Image (cartoon, rainbow, N blue to C red; front, side):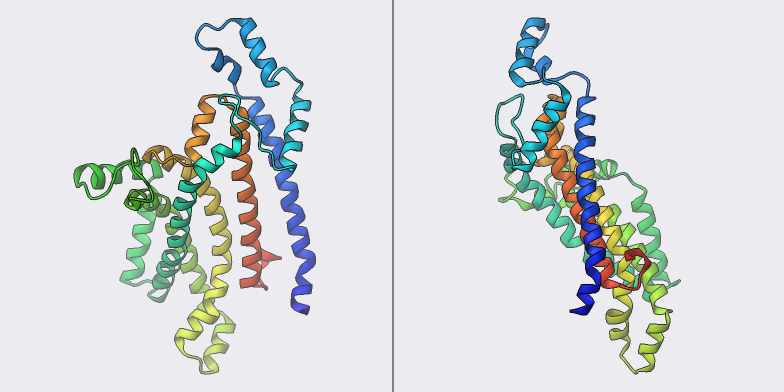
Length: 318
């Protein structure tokens, strides 16, 4: 209990920082969407629109109100769980979330489920054979793969395994994701490639440092087995910086999901966001961006807590 109590002040500060980050995010997103060229009224008015028709549409949508009034109305809605209404379709933004969140969650869950074991496994394997053939091979492959942008990697994999060999579906067009989960294989590989390379190298470096540390030497003097020393004593401290990198990877995954969903035509939240930007549908853009931003803040808070729990003496968590 005393150990938990000693962490409460730091936890409180970290949560307060998260609230501040969320508030700053909301203000930034509103200012950013205000700066977008054009608006939904022009889009809805069609080709060669009548200025009076545009004015009527803007009035109906509330776009003629001052920015501060629209900001206060939007924030008040967010605090009450109201994400707004699409300017283009008139549907609640929650309908768009409900339609796109399933494919996105499946894609993200599949990526994260494989990311941790692959990264830790490769990092530990390379560290156990530091300087050897296995270590050099893993380092060379991870460096090479990390240099390839996800869009280029996606096009390459879809062309080779989808079009040439016909082993996997190249896109999700006219495909039921639940009936044919094979359509997610290539997107998950694309999302995994770069973060696995980054995190595995961090785990490798952390394991090498941890195995040379005094507390590991002390554990060996106590006669503990090599496996227990490696997994119970060295690995938790090696994972502290990797945990925070995992949070940054989740930040990257949010943008990566948008690219991958567009590339493989997956009807997820990323596709909804891209279509909303094209239509200047500001409420949908704002709501999707807030959802992505809040997830990012929560993931970073969780990573800081995990890093402190794994290595309480680490400066990372101080």
